[in-house]
Amino acid sequence: MSGLQSVINYIKEHDNYLILMHASPDGDTIGTACGLCGIIKRLGKKASVACADDIPAMYSRLVGDAVTCNFEVESIIAADVADVKLLGEYKSYAGKINLCIDHHVSNTGYADITYVDAESAAAAEILYDIAEQLGVKPDKYIAECIYTGISTDTGCFRFSNTTARTHYIAAQMLEAGIDIEEINRRLFETKSKSAIELERLVTNTLEYYCGGRVAVITVLRSMLDKTGASDEDIEGLSAFPRQIEGVIVGITLKESEEGGFKASVRTHPPADASELCRAFGGGGHLRASGCRIKGSEAEVKSALVKKAEELLSRHGL
Image (cartoon, helix red, strand yellow):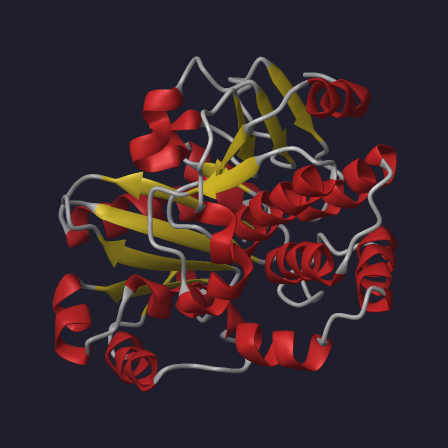
């Protein structure tokens, strides 16, 4: 792993950047990639962003023309990507990624220069330091990118990864003139009608295990077809099982088009979501992680619940 100065030196010395997000993009990878794109352009250099999957509508205003690449790419950066496997179709860039900026302790160190700040609540927090070191004062656009990454990865400053520094950086972004009311409404208080209909169906799949300490919900492809909901509408469902009183491990299973399921795990202390997901080749954060598992719904559910039970029993629960 490299230090922040290596990141600064690389950005200063190179040009024509392609900045990659992870597949199934969230607010942090989008905010970090687009914010970095904005910072690099402020230096008079060329940059664009790319993602293997569609950008959710709530973040589309950040992407804008940042996806326009009218130059020959010379340098490739990965933003908030712990492993090249998470790049989707862009995993073909394995071995060609020059710089990675991340905050996941599980980062595999695949880039030529990898900077990981595991103390940052979001990769977007790191952008604040990068901008400062490069002498770029965040304008309203860059500030909104940074705020979006921070606020979404901290659950609007409710999760345990939120620190005093997190609030300080967010305050600096407010000073740049962002409309916090509009951003928070769009990110946290607006749902499509199809998303509401999907929630109605998914709630009926709720099952409890381990004396109510583990809760599991399932999103099937047939439910998406029936409601007209998109993958974007699923994003807010991951937090639901953990919000239930007495639940320590909340698991949301989403049926994949290619078979098997994607599991989103959310936990309360003392359970470690990343440890549970690492057992299935995934990873992430202490309280929010994910993994992909092949098998039928019953097989996947059984495997995850068994591992969750092992984690809880270790803590005498």
